[in-house]
Image (cartoon, rainbow, N blue to C red; front, side, top):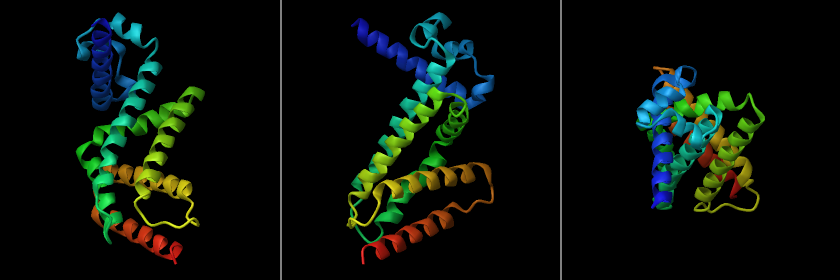
Length: 194
């Protein structure tokens, strides 16, 4: 019972940190503000997370897992001529439905690049993303000449870049851009599978 309560408190703190950081950003967020949002004493946050950085990276890890769970919906898409287009609709929709997740992701990338531990956390997140992409590519009839790791890395970079554009440029045409990217991927797959 105590373990369950500890897990609930930890989860409540992580959820509160997510909300506060998404709302006001890392620079303005304080442990005091997070404790207030979580409805716990600030000392309790320090018990679970000795530093703000520890909390940030745990939040990053938790949100990466949640994002990957959403991306797992690609696995339910039937293999067809439109599979790539249909699959790209999921990350495209996530930018619209969860912009706070993307804002937090970009902020944590910037923070993380300033420390060795942060770089390790980013690398861990990117590895999870690549594994997810490779898993989703498993549905496609790909030959041995396709470097799945390289394609997965490119997918992550493109999807992060498109998310950034969608969030910061009011003139960004997501439908056309994601559609064009799908065409590029379809052409690549067709050429590689000849």
